Length: 230
Image (cartoon, rainbow, N blue to C red):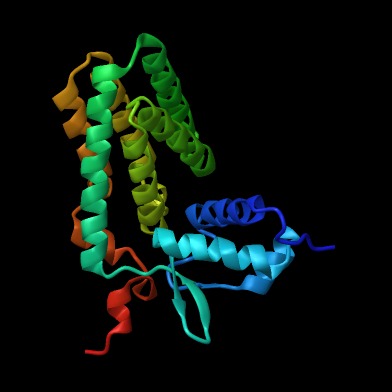
């Protein structure tokens, strides 16, 4: 029996579940968010699903087409470049603050996350690597001790993840990423603020490839450019 929307937490819970599905690649940019299917999947009425989608609209993760429904956000290649550029420098700022403020116990947590990344990379376990990667960045963001910055970088990462989620499928990328994580953690441990900043910026910069090459790996239908007629 479906739950009602009387509990205001229902919408936030559904939104969080959809965000996880987006990050895991269960939806592609441009895909329809079917309200009925989502309601059935989570055993709720359509009311909290509509409220959850409204929250996702406010975050820029989805867009609505009149009489058609809500769809996963699509960016043009120019918008995607701007987003990745902003994410890279915001990550750099996080690493800088972390180098300035992280106590030894936080550095140890970062190193533990790096170890987990390296183990997953050696085993070529993309799922384990993705989990360890999230843990590394979560610790990094929290170590800034700057709540507005943490909230901002998480929002940017959620939007960029729609396009960057297949990065770890590229041969050798997990090992490269793990090495970059270790470099960032070592610079943070050394309290090298600018070194950590630059290492974190380089880490996000489209997985070490040119932006043009990165865009070429994306399906045409995932970019808003492809919606325009020549």
